[in-house]
Image 1 (spheres, rainbow over the protein chains, first blue to last red):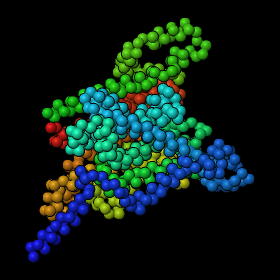
Image 2 (image 1 turned 180 degrees about the vertical axis):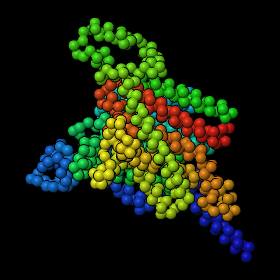
Image 3 (image 1 turned 45 degrees about the vertical axis):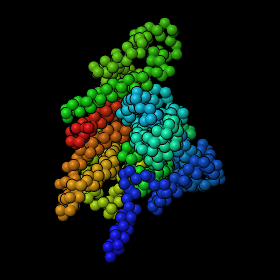
Image 4 (image 1 turned 90 degrees about the horizontal axis):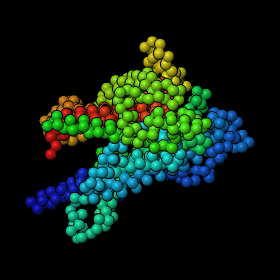
Length: 307
Length: 316
């Protein structure tokens, strides 16, 4: 009788333990199960990444071909082909320009985010591991840049240096490296005081070994979710600058500048400005939904809290 | 103790402002262009160039120029615009008022809406209405401001003909006409700013809802609405004040886009024009105003949370 009670108690405890994986200090789960919204979002992001790679090859027109019958027409076809989404303010095919523009908008943002991560993580983990004046110095500079609105920093740099794709990538990378630095440093500091790191130190492992084998694997999951959020911010930053006419310069196509160019067409009933805006929206919303899904399920709240 | 914390924070804020001014000054003076060259054009002789440089104080070392620039800024002498030669103070004057008016209206409309909706969503977590609010606001914060503005123009101006698509102002219109002209940029900014605030208010309240004293209240049998309004809300006020100040700071980047898209004669539009013509003194002045406002709002947010949260008042 008592044995049975103990057994059911034990089962209850075990059942409870299973539901406890959302404890703040529980290790991040490796396997990720997405809801149907998450799966759909992954499909959307994958679709756009595919367009980045093959878009220019499968686009019906070149981004600079002015083959449409007139500007701001809706879907029509002529002897050159079919304009599925109509034409823009110069009579160019909107669909083709979106396909070409994906490479600029997403490509530039991805590169900038990657650079931001490279810089932010290197400096952040360096600051966490080394501490002392290195940490102080980098952190103070970082705080100063973080204390400014990103768009203002972008405007100041572009006013001074003019706009080109390398400058856009560099500016976005430096600006967003600051928040990556903060997260990487906090994660690094958290991990550095764990017992397993103490053990590794006591074993006499070198700094680089500790970073490589203990710190990075444990920081990987929160950093991965943060990468998604950061990419969204960079896409918004770059396309906002392009929308202001200060980002990617014409005639190259870019989703932000396409909205700007075709804005006046709205009054003539043309949707040429809406399509690229929708392209940005689907991409950024999908990434945010994936991040939301992952962090709701894997206790990756740390990254969200820091945003 | 609290006073000390607040003073310390204000000190940091002041230091940040100094660093900001150094960043703005450095970023806009290391460029290849040379103001004397630009003023005199291609035909300038080396002698006239040198003379003008001396007159503008450009032969001085960098730190001297920085301090004289900072001194001029402080005393309200913002310099002369490269384009047209008008003083920057006169260019900024009216524009600043327009932007402040817009920001004021946005704050007035969006703060009550956001707190009410955020509270309401937190009171009914998990219901389909809460999901709509969460999903809707997440979507809104993931899209660029110009997306929202474009869709609004399409619906309200092009399809329904309710509102004008540009915020053209003569300065002599009646209050109603003014509101009509302002409506589109206002709605856009309110949507952008509210989406953030609703999310953060909801998260703030739900965060408090996890604390032991709320569990106690639930166990006592206090109804949920009463728990939120009487127990959770007052403890979430600190974070909410923080959210409000932070979002007014986000307004800074919002106005840049919105003023451009609706051709609203505000400070941000002036700055964008300055960046396009590379009118650096103008960009410097506008950047200092925007960044200064931003730093001060963030400072207010921090002081607000120190004052409202005893745990922050007495750090270990």
